[in-house]
Length: 337
Image (cartoon, rainbow, N blue to C red; front, side):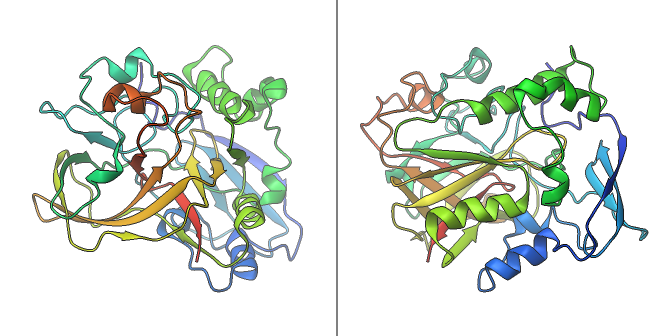
């Protein structure tokens, strides 16, 4: 199976009309959250030249979504996400150092682990225990560049495009996707994950624009929030990282975590729980690379699928211990200040 993070959509130019004077996604953020810096994961997939253009050409394709308004350099910005074949940073605790390959999102907790996720080495772990978050702990991590460069569309553009499994053929037609292709399966998988029911105690929402992500997250947490993402000095291959001094809890139990999905344009699977702790975790690689990592720990996993990847690799049962994961570079977590 092809790497799901490779560019997957054939180039298509879509003409859209943007209302004159409409706020760009970045300006909308600043108008709602003037005291909250935009995290790196978001600025990487924004375009500053969306504002006050009567007609905008949107190219949806191999570089993500490129919005051009007559100026050069409007191409997609590279977004880094950890890897292997799936969505997320691969955390390896076994000696072989093989990444987890994911064909369903490991961040949708009602799903069981797949054979693809476990076929290489049962000791490979995307997840780890909360008591591992201490100075001196060593973990084999693989932070890799991502080809998932899909960028945000302005809300009025995103809202004009069908986002429903009932209208999936319209989506295929809009983006010139062959219905029997792997690209089509990826689109259908994302739509199904977004439309599936949530687990008990979780509120979920798929944001198809930055504006809708802002609205959902602030409706759950208020506007006195911080938004965090993992930042890597430079990309590197698999290596051992040591947790440096300065691990810090940055939130209470309320958080909204938003995971970037595979789709022609930026879509984030956001879920809010009241049993999530967020940590800032400084990491130092064996080769000197430093990472400002964000770790999310789920303190109540009792409603997760008993065969979820976390339980398979950690050898624990649902509801017994907090389960944590590092955020990939293009995912974000919203927390109350």
